[in-house]
Figure 1 (cartoon, rainbow, N blue to C red):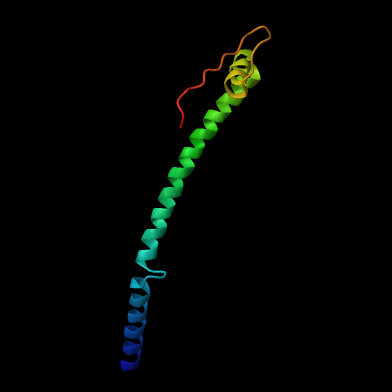
Figure 2: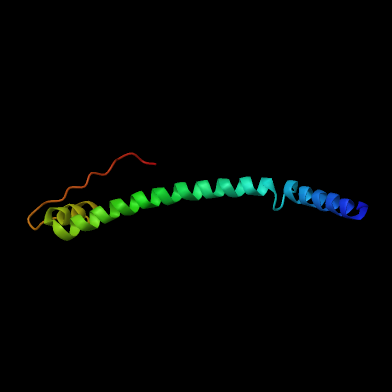
Length: 93
């Protein structure tokens, strides 16, 4: 009887050491929970960005005005006969 009680006490002590130790214990569990939370936040931001990009792709496929706007803003294109003016600041940096 004493032998089994001693064994159980040692087993309990060993489990407690493992529970409160920095590697694999409660501290690591909290750190992992924090990392999961941060990753969920990053994933949500990426989902929103993907939804916006999907809307842009859909607009570019179905709307010529959207194509023209994209070409003007992002590619610097102009229509034939238009004049492009570029104003440069005279301030030296």
